[in-house]
Amino acid sequence: MSKKGKNKNAAMYQGTGAKVGRVSALVMVVIWILFAALMYYLFLPAMNVHSVGMWLYVILVLMAPATCLIMLWYGIYKPYTYQGNGIAKPAGIALLGTFAVLVLLGICSLTGAKIFHAQSYASIMQPQECVFTEDLDQASAVSQIALMDTDSAILLGNREIGSLSELVSQYDVSENYSQIDYNGTPLKVSALDYAGFFKYCGNKDNGVPGYVKVDPVGQNATYVSLDTGMQYVPSAYFSKDLARHMRFQYPAKIFGNLHFEIDEDGKPFYVASVYDYTIGVFGGETVQGAIVCDAVTGESTYYDLAEVPRWVDMVFDGDLLAEQYNWYGKLSNGFMNSIFGKKGCKKCSETVFYDEDGEESYYGSNYGYVAKDGDIWIYTGVTSVNDDASNIGFILSNERTGETHYYNISGADESSAMSAAEGEVQEKGYQASFPSLINVDEQPTYIMVLKDASGIVKLYAMVNVESYNVVTTATTLDDCFKKYRALLGTDTAEESDEVAGQEVPEEPEETVTVETESMTFVISRIQYADVDGNTYVYYADEAGTIYCQKFADDPTCMMRQEGDTITVECALENGVYRIYP
Image (cartoon, rainbow, N blue to C red; front, side, top):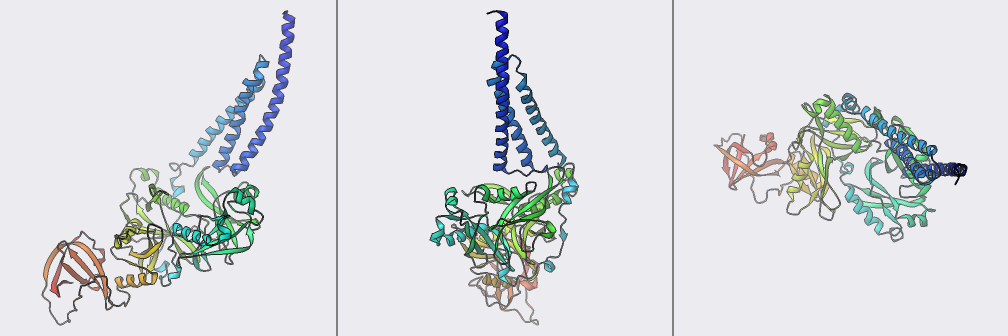
């Protein structure tokens, strides 16, 4: 072929290649736009510079077209041209832009690092030091004590719905129970969920018909049927999906902790906390407000933190409150001190969490709930960072406002109290729930339930915070209170059967002189009993000898533990060595 013919063919191929490249590029741009829209619809990132999701979305949207353009260049355009610069250049720019965004993301992460802002992190939460007996009312009404954990609530809720044949095949009870204060009474609530996509398609016009209320004191569940079904719920799809519905209304808000609540009239709502990052770009997470969505109509309202309605109970979730206190406890004396010296460092106490198979999953902060002043407060102990199985104090944090109170009371941590309660009935193999904290006759007290292997509540238990040797169990809350007060010597109970078969020696008259002898022994067992309104402490040594002491004679005997070696003055009376002060 002549030179002129070759040049003509090359020009033709080049023109064809350029035309194909332009059409292909246009197609790719359309695909890119559709892809970006689909990713936004599926992942719903907040269009906010503080949102990690937005940054990941940008990277994904940049990387995908860059890859496609490179494939287009090598697979379609390059065979028709000798230059190949028309598509290669934008592909390179896309890759360079993706790399630049990744570098910028790393820099933004460093701007909020704790090593640079220790004091700022420590100042996000400012606990108020309060007096326990003044701040927490006497636990005279057992109806104010929320003891049931979520696992027990799930069992009761499923049992209640299982009895309603018209619902059980179409709906499930959500396992995301919320602890709320309902007209002054603690309550756990959870909405029904569609039992899958096809069940949603068949019931979407009627919506979710109701929700479940679980009484944590009475240990019973009630199904509440609504006149009009809930249309906007987490288990719905497409535009009725609650998170998608709220995202389209508030595209720039960073929200989470999406949960179900009811107002004082029993009307259903979903509440989402709105987060803010106050240190750098991604650091110093806290709550700036909440979005409250009517589950029936979908109408949503944003409230700043100070304006959140009084009936809303959970704006700050417990995990965030525990994390913020850990920032305060560990970083108040500087970042380097939190790593090396650890002077004055403290943290929320931690427990072991287990997975569905009963295997140890992770070790982290845990907390209970306390109903106080019409709000729900989380309770957790505070311990040193050395994990010494004892608390140096504890906190109550308001889940609506974030207000936190600190109480300087040392004693056993929650895990030790749970073990002490389980030890009382160790032959039964019951497991203790995470305890709540109450004030019983000005004594800080752990209170919890003991459950069998199937998760059914069998007993209630109370353990003294300052001395976990003072522990009692009973089948009802009232009996548990009565027995516990008897141990404290603050109740006028009848003769206790705590130490069966042992006679309590009569107290000598004041004019009688009792000859005593000094005895030293190792405590192998401790037991408390109430006789005629007086609390007695019984010790057994390794040989089985019994010693008896009146609690009022020496209140510090509460601090004694099994394994301690003590020396006492005592006299043998009715087969028991009576200890005298």
